[in-house]
Amino acid sequence: MTEPLRDQFGRGIEYLRISVTDRCNFRCLYCMPAAGLEWLPKQDILSYEEIAAIVRQLAPLGLKRLRITGGEPTIRPNLSALVRMLRAIPGIEDIALSTNGVKLPELAAELKAAGLDRVNLSADSLRPDRIAAIARRNLGFDPIRAAQAAEEAGLEPVKINMVVMRGINDDEVEDFARLTLEHPWHVRYIELMPVGEMRALEWSHVVPSDEILARLTAIAPLSPGGGPAKGNGPAAYYRFDSAPGSVGVITPMTHTYCGSCNRVRLTADGRLRTCLYGDHEVNLRDPLRAGADLTPLYVQALAEKPKEHHLLQLQVGGLKALSQVGG
Ligand code: SAM
Ligand code: SF4
Image (cartoon, rainbow, N blue to C red; front, top):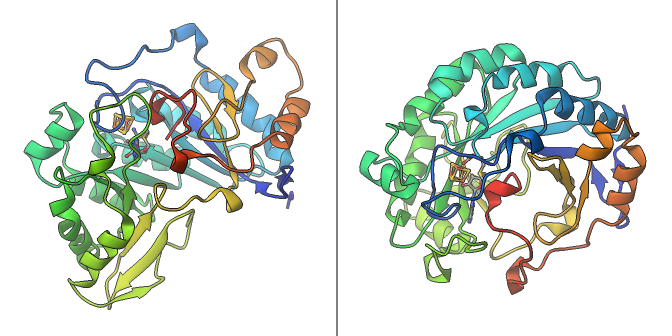
């Protein structure tokens, strides 16, 4: 088994988040302006063959886990073709997908057959009118149906991510938690990051995770642990007695995870970003198209990976929306 390449602070990097598009069929309040963003020109976007070629070069350097994200990855045609190419790369142990779930009922079985392991589904409400208001689009999205489609296709463990926004959807925290009493689903509450150019939301909309956990404890006793066996990442998990699923919190606003960061990101136009925030990025697309060896560029990028970001101090540079860098 290949040991992951280490950065200058000794962090082993084994996880790549791959954005396959900056576009989306939603316009979530916290992510994109209602009018959308300035989309990348098609010729700038990596083809599936180019994405696979990059992963093929990086896997021998210890890359083991991939997440396909965006924008909304499922709006890119024939996504399962990419999954199939990535699955065939030696050393890749886990391939996950982050999606808003709109197309999951249609695509889950096909993606599983192509070699996808599991999904993270974003769902900020269980109420149709509110889903449409938060996404600023009414596409008939049904989160329960999407999660069931993923489970039935064997895309497990199914994780459901809810961005909690005060006064907008925080009254549904308990409803989401109750899903874990009936289903083997892992509901994760994400602290809203009021960053970038999506000024529709402010600091006053942030609900700290301690407040969320206090509300969950009022439903029934919660024990720490019990999260999914695969891809635990930065979430802290809890479980209600004998519940098949778990609840977790992801706390970008009240904690940073920089000390144990094991990831880098590839943007849809082929820039390798070693930190979610800031301007640390390396163009891999042009060297790849010129036939160059990417190894020295990757090694150099990891050597320069920053120790930490300064989101908590709001020194956020060069980031319009998480959708531009793959969440
Ligand atoms: N479109 C896919 C989706 O929604 O899952 C994948 C891309 S989306 C940018 C990835 C994740 O980032 C989603 O779970 C979304 O809720 C989260 N996200 C985007 N902007 C955020 C923000 N300002 N604060 C907290 N989470 C955010
Ligand atoms: Fe699209 Fe995901 Fe951003 Fe919502 S969070 S606008 S679904 S990319």
